[in-house]
Image 1 (tube, rainbow, N blue to C red):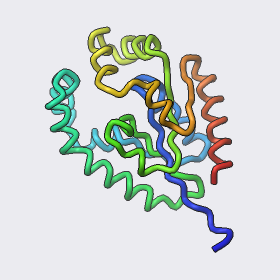
Image 2 (image 1 turned 90 degrees about the vertical axis):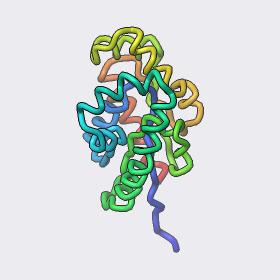
Image 3 (image 1 turned 90 degrees about the horizontal axis):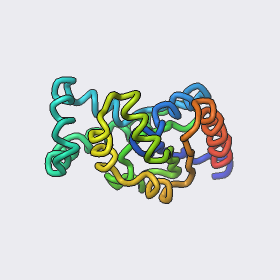
Image 4 (image 1 turned 120 degrees about the horizontal axis):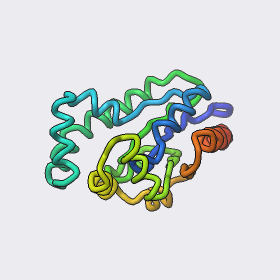
Length: 181
């Protein structure tokens, strides 16, 4: 059939404290619908349980794997249902921090990675999230290095500057994405 556009499945990933959430916010401002895997995970776990789990899962790989085995199938199903139910003209942007770690990258036509230098990540985690340097290091270390995620992605947004710099970079990504459809 001619004239039928393929619905692109788009993932936004990156390292912790690299600016994925802010990039998603800017994409929403541009009219893109978004869904965040972290929000889906938080809906499955009570706030009290999250606090307790955070103390162990970043230090104990076995505990992290057990939690992921419980949550990830439900999150993946919810993301797929959101994609199937997206009636918007623009593609749904699925924010998935652990996209490569959980090997879901094959589900997506386009992967955009938001990356920052490690020093920027550490600074953001300490100043905006109140983590100690040790906690920030543990959480960064629990994920695939952001440089590796960037290498595996179709598009990379570097986010070591201001919010306005990120907004401009996200607008450039949106223009690029529009050409892919």
